[in-house]
Image 1 (tube, rainbow, N blue to C red):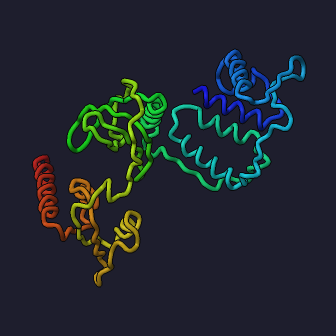
Image 2 (image 1 turned 90 degrees about the vertical axis):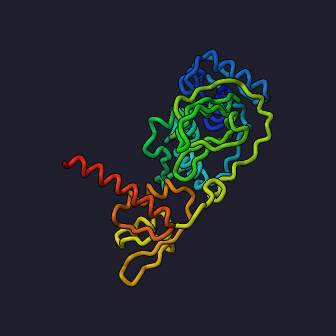
Length: 305
């Protein structure tokens, strides 16, 4: 976007004593004519830019116009770069990489030492997530609705929304927007979305509340599970729920009690634990597990005959 490029050019000029139009054109992947127009726009905005022709010439900002970087410490810059790297891990373009280069270009003496924080937000789905995130970011910037196929436990359905926030939460990416079907704000998981496309412009005058991302709001508890786990499952309980989520029994088994929001997710988790868990409550989950495992046993018994 042009505003991003103008900010980038200004930052380069603030960090470097002098540069040239060809160098800026190559850095921002645009034509030299576009860079010349950008310089004119910056001049119109009151930035004191001067140009010099011939050998040793170039583009620079007049002496005395400098940004004081003392408000940022080396640690501050490391945190900024760590945040940009995390976004770059799910970026389908070169924007964040270029932005990091701009920051580091004039700060080599300011940012030193090895990176102490490395964040990768791409999980297992980088190839599919990056284009989705880029399409949604563009739609938010352009104020365009997006249409997509959504796959959920309630079935497959085409949705169209006004997108407002991209959110990383609970180890996954979500889009928060106004659903034109439900006439309300909804949260959609990107991994369940497919065939995302821009549709139509919207006015952007809707009052948009900040999304309530508390677990109690998004995943309201429906019931409470009580189960006995094999001691070999201690690491998983600690990883998922913490060291205080269970009580060790005299025989070494782990008594686990916790509220949960969805029967299907609980069933999936219990089945993934195989024979290392025994559900004590609620009774309907016990009955459902018995039904599922019986059907599985029958299927494989039939294959062996």
